[in-house]
Amino acid sequence: MAQSTSKIRVFIADDHFVVRQGLKHVLNQNPDMEVVGEAEDGGQVLERIKDLEVDVVLLDIEMPEKNGWEVMIQLKALYPKLNVLMLSIFSEDHYGLRLIKSGASGYLTKANASNQLHQAVRTVASGGEIY
Image 1 (cartoon, one colour):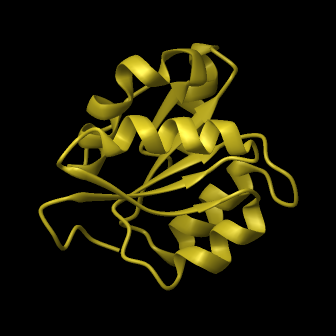
Image 2 (cartoon, helix red, strand yellow):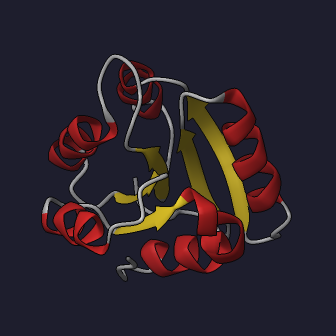
């Protein structure tokens, strides 16, 4: 799951199609980023990511089947070096801190995602944290 090319390989997980498409559009505007997969629920994330090389997972907290928090914990158990950037409509700062303490590489609100997404993905892909 480590970065193996010059592009940052991103996997998007959100239960809303329009959100996934918007995130994909924003990320694909950068020559150093590539969306390599997507999922609409927690089960799909765990199933689809195992066959991909991924540097950063953009993971919505609220999803059907398994929520993002559960999926993040499972992903980190399976792929300890995988960078997981959590997304949510909630803006509470303590929420982000709890996610970081649980293993997430970062936390972004969906309201700020379009402005901060590129830099946040670069930061967590290089081993940093953002919240």
